[in-house]
Length: 265
Image (cartoon, rainbow, N blue to C red; front, side):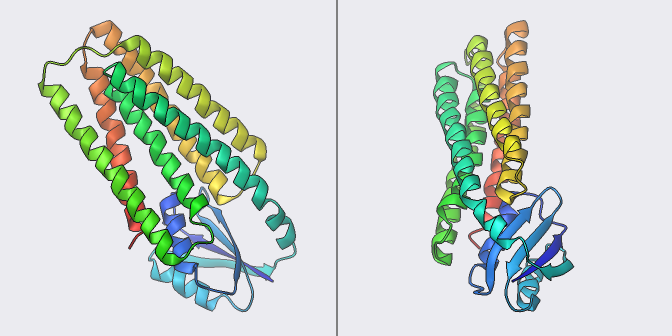
């Protein structure tokens, strides 16, 4: 068993990770892919030489180079950690999906587009985690279909969100219930804090864990933004702080949808 580490300069989010997984999926000499997104590195445990692997990676135009190739003495230890990390990912996925449902429901009840947008950001994270978990072991066609469906669904939600924000900007809408905005966002902040605690406690360098930490850290910032918007709604008695935050988060959700759609090409 060999271990080849690649530097992939343009790999900065899980959508690129999934593209790479799909590109390499049919290579029978690959035993394990270990992604390090923050450092933009991919470690491949494989038999035979790495020439075909590098060629596939280079075709993606992600600025790939080879760091080194060594004997994989720790391969069995790396494999043993997979089930534990998978269980942890399921926990993070469950927390994200729960708060998606909670924020979506309370967002409509309280007339807050900030909460609705934040809920879709949670859903975007859940979609990426779900892609990583449900597509494992599936065929290339199945993976592409999952990515396409998830991407279009997320993009549709973002478009309807933008349309609703525009309607509320120009229409006579009631001021959002700032108490609900703040309370639910604080609960979501606690949920994301729990996710970060679980992920950091694992001390894992696995790609999905690193990606989860990046996503959850971004969610914390969004939660704080909605809390601030709730405070501004209270101080100004205006709907506009909520709509501005909602617009920004819908833009983030839309960007994520386009990245996911790349997986289906």
